[in-house]
Length: 346
Image (cartoon, rainbow, N blue to C red):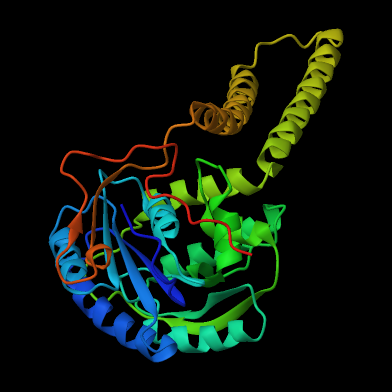
């Protein structure tokens, strides 16, 4: 496992990776240079391979074997971006922790200004996208709609146009790791923790290489997880839909009674068809909303581990260029603690 007895670095950089072989080398060059400038060399970079199927892991392993400031963690399969983030946060030892993706859409060079802003007393400095380069009109429009809809529906004030790219203090990270949710929406959880959270504006660049890891289907699932994690308003919507359907049913019953009293008893298959399909649709929508919340309750009750770590490579553990590698086949399986959480700090 990872040695935590050595002096704690000023900064930990956590970068989840999934099929980022084309951009990883460039990311490490830029991130290392930026962290070097911002901390004077007192930093670590934690790379988490979330079940990549390309050459991402060999590149990560090579980097960790030759640079004691780099740690490579390989998950046993693809557990998802948020779980990879969690694995990296649990391995991070730094007084401050930067979350950033390895696709170079979020600029590593922003770490200096973010550190300066945190020196002013901020607990969290999060990147706020003022422009999204290289994205389609549909992607920009749907993202803007999602963030604003989430903010309106959520019981927590979640900033708009902000992803997981953020710098956090050690205390915020420890509080975040203490939260037990299975369905984790990191930016929402950080907002829920409160404290002084400040934005820093930047232009989000196009991907350095490769394809997006969030196609439409994944984006919809991610949006659904976010909404159901931080709002019960969809359940209230289901209630109001039920009331509306009941009211409409009463009006139709009254209309049918009046028509019967007048002797107009000619069968109307059109009105009957419309009524049946309308009520059926409302019932399915309501059941679907309830099912989403019920399914999350079932998953939470199982208490399965968030992820399983397959391999950890770190030259730091042996104090030299020779890498420490976790035993082959000895995957770590704990209740969400595949890499031990850092001890509390005052």
